Image (cartoon, rainbow over all chains, first blue to last red; front, side, top):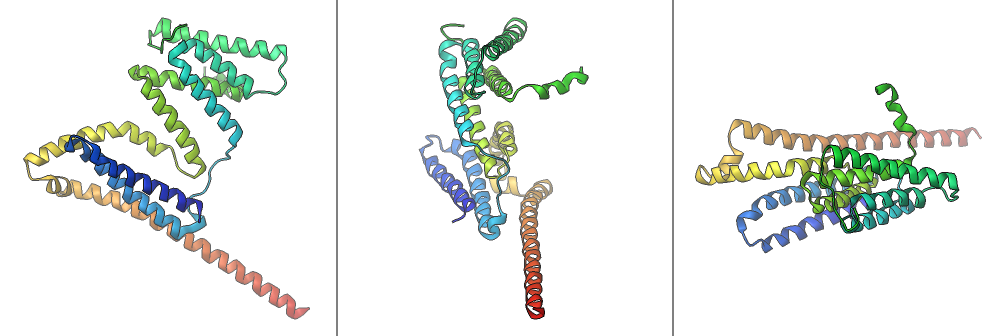
Length: 147
Length: 145
C-alpha cells in the first residue's frame, strides 16, 4: 500500500475519532464550530485519499531531506529545555540549551578554543536577550528557582 | 545597515538552531505569558517538520491558528443572528455574496484537483509515447541485425 494512502487514511481516522469525541461536550452549543470544522476536514481528507488512490505515485512527494539522528537529538534537547524552562528559569536554561546544541550537535573533536568561543557566544547572546527584553522592553519571561 | 545583513549567512548552523529555538520559545511565551502556548508551538513545529517530509505545507496550519479564533467568533455571532432571524441554512447559504464566496471556494478546490489529474494524465501519455518509441527502435534494430 502506498505511503500517501496510509497517511490520508490516518488523517481520516483521526477526524472520525475527534467527531466521536464531540458528544463529550457538556454544552451542545459549544460543539457547533468544532463540528463544522471537522466535517470540512473529513471532506478534504476524503478528497486527499481519493487523489492519492487516483494519482498513485504522482501524488504527494517528499520535499526535503530528512535525517533522523540530528532530528531526534534536537527533539530530545528541546523537550529537556522546555521541561526545565519553568523550573530553573528562562535565562539559565536557555544558556544551557544553547551550549548543549552547539556541543552535542557540533564537531566531534572539541578543543579549548572552540569551547571558549561557544561558551562566550552563548553568554553574549543571553546577555543581549536580557538587556533587550528584560531591561529595555520589560517583557515577562518564565521564572524559575535560579533566574 | 542592509549592506552588512548578508553576514547573517555566515553564522554557523548550530548557533542558528540554538538562537532561533530560544527566540521562538521566548516570543511564544511573551504573547500571553502562557506556557501552554510554548507546548503548542513545539508540538506543531515538530508535526510540521515531519509533515514537510510528506509534502504538506506548514502555511495552512499557521493560517488556521491565526484565523481560527476570528472565524469562530464571527461564526458564533452569525449563528446567534441566524437563529433569531431566518434560520442557519438560509442565513449562511442564500444571498448573492454568500453564494459567490461558496462557489469560489468549491471552484478553487475542484480546479486544483482537475489540474493535478490533467498533469498526471499528460505525464502518463508522455511516458507511454517514450515507451512506444523505445519499443519501435528495438524492433527496427532487431530487423536490421
